[in-house]
Image 1: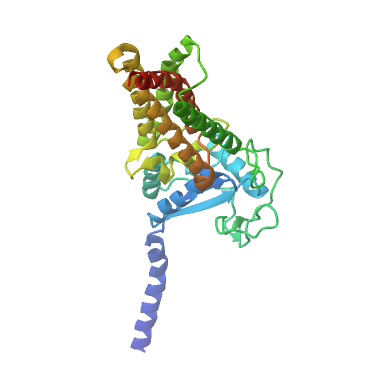
Image 2 (image 1 turned 60 degrees about the horizontal axis):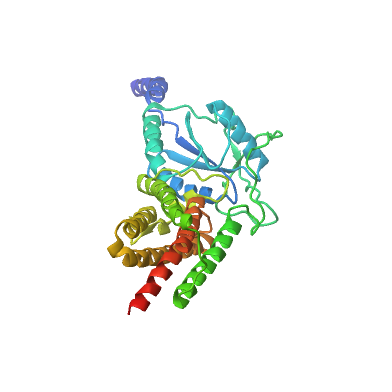
Length: 361
């Protein structure tokens, strides 16, 4: 009988202690969620996705959730609602939201800010910006893609089970059909044609010793164009060395180009810095021709040689943009046109002085 009483007493004590232990058990913190809103066909988004996936993988309690918003109205609705909850108006993709912070672009330099927010949220449990917008459960259902093509692994694996409402019009056009995107490809192709024609004309004219004459004042366009080129190359050097997002304007996607492996030579020399050095060399050659008569001929030939190299190199870079990177940098195209003009302007003095050298011999 005593054994039964002792056993019952132990059972009562065990059950009475169980709720206290449950209350005192450490609560698992909620995961920090990186929300990525992207568009199918946006080249810059394709750069952001693998980088953010790698960022999320570096932390144990961090998740990345991706939502395509150009072709999925439910995701677009979520985009607008979450943006309103955070306190901004969505304007572009990719847009990245973590807690109460957001970024409407991606570049490698922004990851430090994101990691700072993530570290803070892992310690202090930041509020989820999707609180009240997404239910606790989700439906395992692939996201639709444009056309009849099958879902791709880049799309989010699940979508929220909430009733979609008519979304507000997103001020970003969906990607047009392949081959018809307004991404600056037509301008890049035109640039390659013009550069090829100018290069061919210059080489033939120099070989024949004849060129179309230019007015005297045209020679003074050279330093003006060079100064403009220094500004372009200087800005690209800043973007490449500081790893910041470039201002691309309405044409092309310069950030995709600037973050590609082809933005550096030999793994350490940014193309923008090479361009900056090239413009400075052209300026030095022009000043030498104008100010030092004894070096006039050699300076003119040096200017022509550097401008020929610049055009050939610009042709190569434009080819990479069109057929390898598949994105166009408007800053690079601008520089390509500038060096083409410099080639045509530097040709007459070089032909004239080279002809004088032949006559002297």
